[in-house]
Amino acid sequence: DVRFEGDGPPEQGRRGRVPQDALAGVLTGGGSADPVEAVGEDAVLALERAAFMRLVREEATLQRMEHTLGTGRPLRN
Image (cartoon, rainbow, N blue to C red; front, side):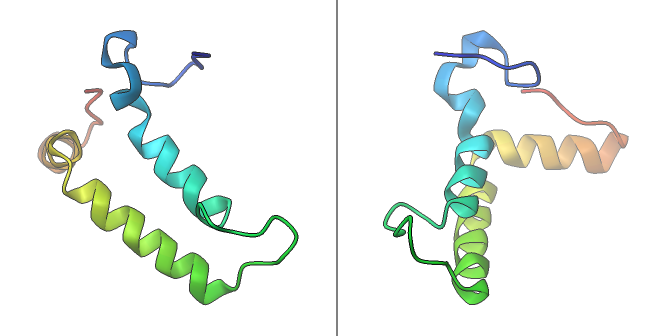
């Protein structure tokens, strides 16, 4: 498991990579995308919307949003 600066704490394991994995899925056109075919804008927007809706249901995401709105500073959880 390669860790990059800015990832979640090591004790989180895969959980610390949930937002990065969601973004990677959107940017690569989703799991069933053809590497040769271009993905249309509407398809990318649908992938983005689906990823966002999955992420906002995560408890850690809700905690980060509430903390940032309340303090103006990001929460690293």
